[in-house]
Length: 93
Length: 223
Image (cartoon, rainbow over all chains, first blue to last red):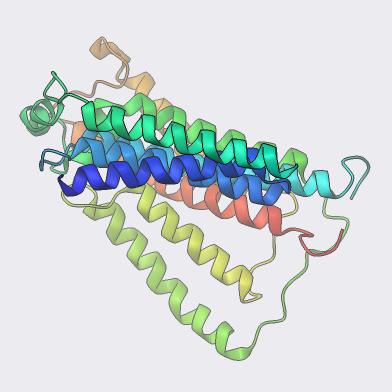
């Protein structure tokens, strides 16, 4: 059991935790946070799997860096939509 | 949601977790030797750090599309945020003098750090994304200290800054199309082209990431 494998398994745990949260939770904000947890788990699994044999693979690291930035943008968009929803969704605020 | 459904969801999530974990434990090592290929071609990439080489040279189109996605997300937030046109003055938080002084001291250092990260990306961990994130954090800090208003609608210069990185990236991509593949740089100019793209990306990413916060912060208090 290398450290990389432990990271990958921890990523699976985070992903599953987030998935259950997305299904079970009711509020939009909590669902967005749970969805982020799923993303973090996927990133951790990718990076962990890539270095389970001890070496460092720059390709998944670059992909995860891209993914993190996109996840930030998607979260911000989701928050904007959630706020719009909370304000009633029609008219100017 | 009643307790039985909730329990069912949690149990199926646990089962999925166990299945994924066993799949990961059974996964064979990849047949293709990607790290070796990256190291072998690093000398031609124009930079000395493998992650930067992958981001901006070997998989440059991923990064190109990523910046477009970021811009799209910001536009979506702008479209979804109420009160366009700045009819209502954006709320500036009441901030103490300690926070304001600290922000005034920290922001120049953060800009310096962003410049260093941009430069360091060529040969050690760093690069446009990290530098842009530091720039965005500086803008958010200024806003929280009450020194920078939230964004209602962007002026021309701001719009230019937001799309400048993507436009520079596209311009370079169009200029090197003659090489036969998308974003294949000529080997002797690759370093300079990557630095040009990264400099543009740093500014644009900083503004976009700051915008994700500052547009949401606009009239973020009470509707």
